[in-house]
Structure formats: structure tokens, C-alpha cells
Image 1 (tube, rainbow, N blue to C red):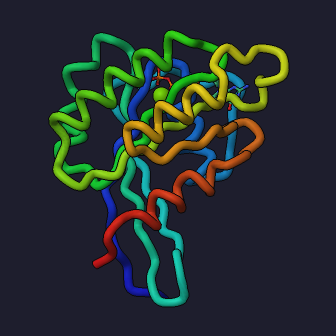
Image 2: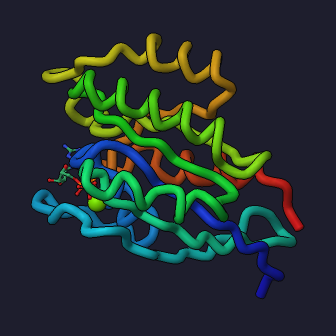
Image 3: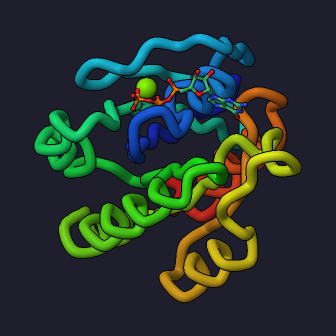
Length: 172
Ligand code: GTP
Ligand code: MG
């Protein structure tokens, strides 16, 4: 039984990009093809060892992407240690929205917050990709963000995304 470091996570992005699906994949290793849009926000937790000595308890706020909930976001990122901003690689507009929300986080969120950009629905890349990986990745590098393309459906890069962020957080 490891000592625990508790970290507060904030998940943000346009509606239907797959935020809830990513969190559910990470926490319960499940996926649904038909998932209802989140109302307000959902709170989930997961505890995983990150090395021989320490476990990280992830306390995750999975927020609603619909525009009418936008004003609630500061309530959740105010205490966040890290944020995952998600877009859908098949919807270019969702990356534009992610960029504006990243700007807001960099202005308003607590100092030292670790921000990751995740391009989700990677399983649809071959047929429906609308955002080039290199474009999103160079934007992320410029802004100093971690970057992953993920699939909540196949689980590709999901654990990698969460553990890469955890590894960038100061442990205490
Ligand atoms: P809001 O709660 O409205 O903000 O949406 P959300 O970002 O939480 O999206 P949600 O997880 O509800 O997923 C929306 C739809 O996309 C659902 O039908 C999911 O099954 C589907 N979906 C999510 N992730 C993936 C993925 O990686 N691949 C594919 N093919 N579909 C996905
Ligand atoms: Mg949701």
C-alpha cells in the first residue's frame, strides 16, 4: 500500500469530443458507443501507483462541453493541478475551441497548472481525419503543452496521456 499524492484534474473541450469517454476508459476501462452528453460536470476518481514508492490519486472533474455550461468552468479549474483539453481529430472546429480555452486557462488558471492537449477519436483517423497531427502538435509545442492523440474507443494512448501528465506534476 503506497502513500498517496492527490491531484485535482480538470477535463475540458467541446461537446461530443469524447471527454467523458476518455475519463471512463481511464477509470473503469469501459467504452460506450452511445453516451449521453454530460450535464454540469461529473466527478470520478482513480488511484494508480506511478513508481515503487508513490501512488497518485486522480480526482477528475469531467465537465460538460455544451456552450450553456461554459460559465461554470472557472469553478472547476480554480483548484486544478492539471487540465486535459480535448478536441476531436475529425472536427476542425473543436480544435479552434480548444485553443481559445487553452488561452483562458493560461491566463486564469492557477500558476504551475500542467496542461495537455488531446486529439481524440484516433480510431477514425483513416476515414475521417480533419486535423493533421503535425499541426496540432506544433501548436502544442509552441504553447508548452503535452500532446497526445488518443482513442477512448480502442484505449490507444489513454493511460499514456494520464501518466505523462502525472509525471510532470510536482509530487508531495
Ligand atoms: P459532453 O459531455 O457533451 O461535453 O461530451 P463529451 O466530450 O463528454 O463526449 P462523450 O464522451 O459523451 O462522447 C461523445 C460521442 O463520441 C459518444 O457517442 C462516444 O461513443 C463517441 N466517442 C468518444 N470517444 C471516442 C473515440 O475515441 N472514438 C470514437 N469512434 N468515438 C468516440
Ligand atoms: Mg461528457
